[in-house]
Length: 176
Image (tube, rainbow, N blue to C red):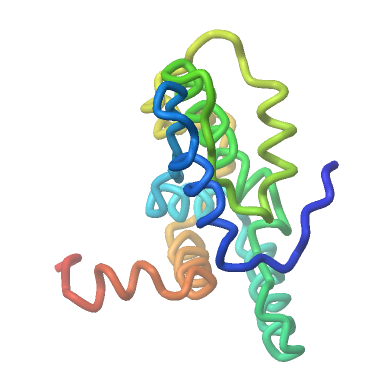
């Protein structure tokens, strides 16, 4: 695993963009910033995790806040549930973007960089359409989760995500 500095400054985004900007015009270097759709990621995670495990993660989050650890990332507690789809999507997107230019700059969250590199090394040679990442491939193998447990998981993940669903949908009565 690569060691990444845990403290990140404002120029962590600025530097790659400047690098791209100041490369020679005949050697264009695009900068790519992408992410897996947040609502889909929240829904998929809520369906994959058991209520008990989600409660433990939420309790750990509350303990970390109580101990002034504001950099806690719940996704790192269970890679398979919270990050695998996202990192696979980012690796495939990055691979497809490399076909458009000899050089490319990709902005990746430093907390997920090790997982990205590991996934990048295992990327399939066959191009995968990006919409395939939006389809749930494990419907047959999935544990059945009660609707009430799904909603409770969804609420806890929403709280961990700074109330994304509430702020963008419930608050504006989009769900009615």
